[in-house]
Image 1 (cartoon, rainbow, N blue to C red):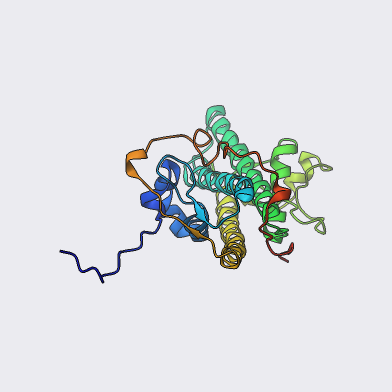
Image 2: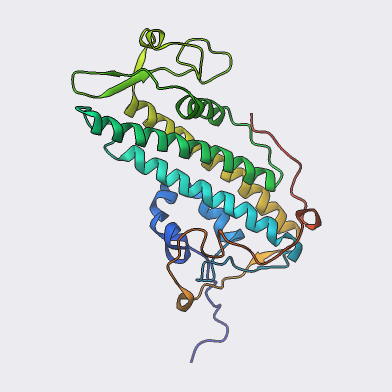
Length: 279
């Protein structure tokens, strides 16, 4: 017979065991690069096992739409970080360019990488707006300018070394910088006169800085959420049920789908801290 005085073990959410299919597969990635994502998820989202978020006791029902929308944008950031990282980790930028097929593969991956970079920056900003945080991170701003050069600019003048590895000109990534390859205004001949960097090395540094920045911002989200849950005496309820477990792709379950509520954000009784800026 169990000792009635023995305290029951308090179950807590763990991404590798209770996340959805994407989150479980990304658990080690999150633990290495985006640990604050899991810390938010454990106290503010959870998972009932069927891809729907857990109940937060004492949490105003009128705020559920806000919680859902905030999380959909955070989830989009996570997915985009993983996909950008995997593109960088592939051989797309270290495979020698020997014909048009290998160039095409390089080019498609370059466009995709910067598309995900833009998606990361846009959606982390929207997530911040949802909880009153105005994000102004210089690291992200400069990479968004780089994204505009690749996505909206003309074909970038490249060079190929003796090993077939690609270099491109240093980008102009701050409004005050005049040296480098811009979104518009220079012809290819001028681009070839600019210092060229290896694409693989540039993107490796970029994704490392972006992941660090995103984790820092998730940390700011976490602090705000901690404060508000404490203020309202709200606690997440452990509701994971493995019998409900199913494999869903993002957008087909409760995480990225409708919360089933039609409340207006303006009715939310939780008042997150006033907007802040990260200089």
